[in-house]
Image (cartoon, rainbow, N blue to C red):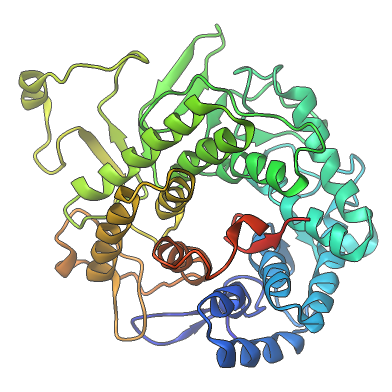
Length: 434
């Protein structure tokens, strides 16, 4: 009933609310992998969870995507009503985050302030934390017939729709939102990676879950690049592009692919393929065969293809890094799922077997570099051969709910689960489409 197992030392960890994060996050993975005995043992434990039994004073959006999403996904697969009851309990608690003067959620639900009606949204909230409840609250509204859950997240959707073209980089939203004053047009920093990725991930998934019944913002189509970088809009209006590759941003390949498929925009599917293959290239080119958290690429100054200048590269290169990589800002691998998620999505969309081959190479590299006697561990540096990596003694719940599940589904027979009937949330929990 702890949140995480340390895969090297074997010690338990309390990391997210003390609500058995790994167990709840893994429920639907157990069902999909036909581990029925383990599933019902876990479901029995879930039924006894007490959301008030925590030493934490607050919780963040992770409780929505991991716990609420995990419960809803497990219910939609199994139909076990006790799991739905626990989801409603948790949903009612998380709903209180929207009880603020602007009806916009605080990124952290402070329990004491919520009880007193004193919650306020922040003036510098990450866009991901604000927008990451959409799928779960929409599905909970459908299952319960209570529109309050959908009404809460629909206010955010309307704000995104109203402000999409008035930000300093029209078409997308800044990394941080001022929800206390409902101002989104003053921030200068933009990214599709860390702190924002799940916002963009949810756009096509909400389209799929709602069947296109309600207009929502769409992604811009001009980012025909191999990697989704960052941008800062200067005071004079000029755009400073940053050629940073992030593992979190690898989800954008699947976002473009899924959105392009659902909306019939062929060139978005092509963009999705290019971004996905860029992340696969980053896996292949690193010494451990795994992409790091973040690194700086050699920039191409235009949207057109750039010719490679070998003499220039040789004169500037750092021999510690692979060709094309300027620096590795964060060399860790945290067992993240974003790259394999996009590989999975592109395989489902295109049917190309090359994506299975990519997935297999990625899995073998991850297994070699991260496996321990008790599981798999985050590693501190991908810039060494996989046999010699230093383990960080951490195995977060998304390893079970996302990374392993996507690898498994890439190679699973089509009749294992009819994926067309579901939308996979940010944590890869399958929410049934109406």
